[in-house]
Image 1: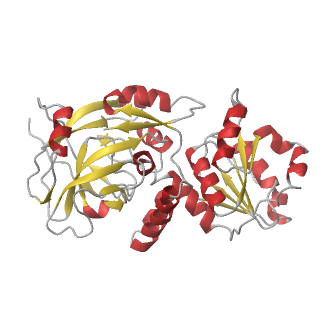
Image 2: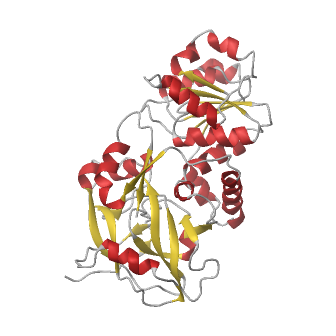
Image 3: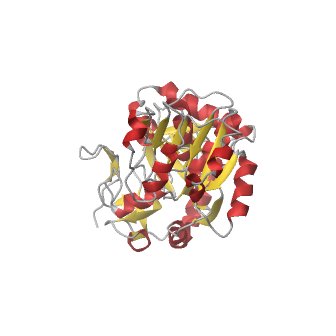
Length: 385
């Protein structure tokens, strides 16, 4: 069977990097690949010692548990400006699931490798690569890279390095949720120590990052979660991260909120990852001139804004998508670098930890996908290659 090497190609339809590929058959096991990869690294190369990888591909959109399959893929030679990496760990995020379902804002051409986030280790670099060296840890700069694979040959510009002195799970989950939390806290309101932020979906990965980053800056958080059997346990866990207050969604509509605001100022900023009535209730508690930023819609309901909030309280209603932020700042190397450096500093200080994670062997991806799609999921599924 004649095969094409996979390569990154611009897709004018939606702006996402896509892959052209076809599977190949081979008798070499993934375990043997990992052993060979770990035996050493080299500075320059035009022909990699590994000619293929194992990847989780989908050839049509649909239920991830049905359409994602493990297949072998050819790898191209390492070019002058490319790097050969072996993937170490990659999470399963809601955006990954939505992309496979065909409902996300950007969709790669099919067939495609799943996964938009993860951490890899550089094994070989091309002769013109300047910013990376063998042994470095790297993460994707943008969505659509296809991280659910054992190895890849990537353009140097598609990845950015991370320090290796942070935990593996923190590195694997750094590029999306903590960056989203960081930018929303930094870019929409001028927050100072003692100010308050209110958020729903507080137990999500973004919510946990918001709690920790805000606490490190002396900012109070009111954290809204859905009622559940283990509410007290969840409350204790979020407060241990630095949450100032943890409340149920129904509390937003009760007089208890007046008592709460005796101990903290009304929030300048509301972060909405749910939509629907939950978002409307967040708006009701903003101070005059405050902002609500929507970054997700887990409730699958539109955001309704009362006219009175706009006219009499002058609130701002904004949206945020970290992928667009990265693309808008793609020519500003320092913007992404400085944000990652600050987040890594918080990690080293013990002020920012990875969300609760379940490490799953790459071969058990089907189980991980099933768990990732269950409601009230308490742990992020992370594939370990």
